[in-house]
Image (cartoon, rainbow, N blue to C red; front, side, top):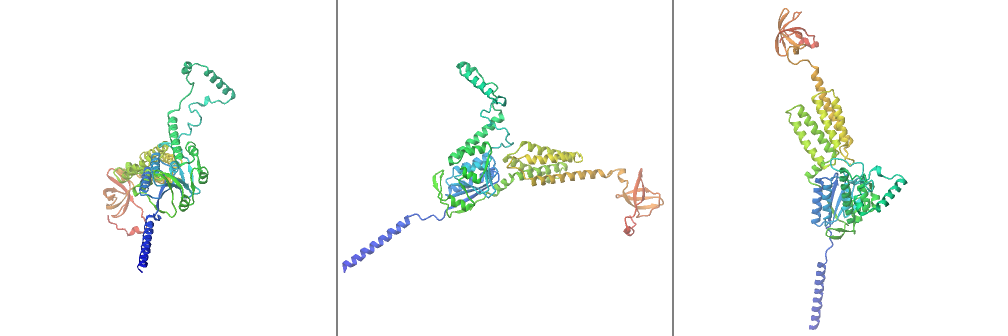
Length: 503
C-alpha cells in the first residue's frame, strides 16, 4: 500500500514537471507579430524644400520606430535637385524598407521623381502611369537645345567633320605622318582649330555628367537598369509602367496599395542595417500628412499659385502708386510679391519669361499714369500673358484657364483706368467762371429782368431777358464779370409744378 502511494506521488510529480516545462517552452517561443504596421507618405507636386523636410522627417521617424514598410506615393513633375537629394539620403539611411509607388492611374514620376524611385528599396507603378524625362534643368533658365554630347569630341567644330571618303583618307594619311615624328616634334604640335567647350556648354556638361553618375550609382545599388536611367538623363526619354517593368526600371506594377502589399510580401531587400525580408501580409498602414506650414509653403510653390501671386503683387503696387495713401493695395501687393519671390526661388523658371512679365507690368503702369488710349496697356497685357506662358519649363507650365483669368482681370483693371480717364476729360472746368456755365440754379429774389439766383450753393447777381419769379429754375448761359446771364430752365416733367417756388 505504501509502495502504491509512492508510485502515485512519483507519477504526479512527473506530470507536474512536464506541464511546467511545456509552459516554459511556450512562453519562450516568440509569439507571432500581429501588430506589424507601416506608413504611407505622399509626394504630390513639385519636389521643394517643404516637401523634402516632410518626407525626410517621416522616413526617419518610421525607421526609428521599427515600422515594417514605408510606402511613398508619387505624382510629381520633378523639382529642385537639393530637395531631391535630401529625400534620397533619408531613404538610403532608413532601416525600414521604402517602397515608391507612382499612383494613382494617370500620375507620373518625372525628373527628380525618377531619381527617388531608383533610390527606393522597392519601386512600383500603377497602370497608365509614366516615368522618365530626368534631364536636369537649371533654376533661372531652360537647358540649351544643343547638347554637348552630340559628338564623341565636343571640341570639334562642324567644319571639321568628315563628310566624304577622300577627307577620311586625308585624315588617315596625316595621322600616319604624325606617328613618324619624333617625341620633341610631337610635343610642339598643337591641335588646329580645336575649340574647347564654351563656358555654358562646359557647365551644362558637368551637370549632365554628374547627374548621370548619380543615377547610375543608385541603379547599381538597387540592381536596376542603369543604361536606361542614363538615357533618361541625357535624352529625356520617358516610358510607361509596363515598359518600365520589362526594362527592369521598376520591380512591380500594382493596381492599388493592397495589390502592392501582396506582391511585396516575402521580398528580400537591402537596407542600411542589412538584408530584410518583407512581411507585408495584413500590415496596418497609417497615412501621415505634412504639417500645416509645410502644406501652405508647398501650395505657394505651385506654378499656378506663383503667377497668381505675382499678378496680385503687380496690381496692388500699381494701384498704390496711382492712388498714394490707400495703404491696403500696397500692403497686399508687397506681401504677394514676397510670397511670389519664394515660389520662384524653389521653381525652375525661364529668365526671358520673367523679363516679359516685368516689362508687361511696367507698360500697364505707364498706361495708368500717361494714358495712350489703351495702346501701351494692350501691349503690356500681351507681353504679360506671353511671359506667364513661357516663364516655367515643360512640366511646370501654368494652366491656360489661369492665364486667361489673370488676363481678363488685368484687362478689366485697364478698362476701368481708361474709363476713369475718359470720364475726367469729358466734363468742363471744375473751378472759375467757366465752371459755372450751363449749371442750373434757383431764383432767390427777382425784380423785372434782374435779381439774385442760387447756383451751386452760391448767391449770384443775375440778369434775364424775361421776367422770373422766386423759386423758378434757371440755367446759366453766359457770365459777364460777376453777373450771370440766365434763362428759365425747361420743366423736367409733370411733377415739376408740385415743387416749391421758394429758394
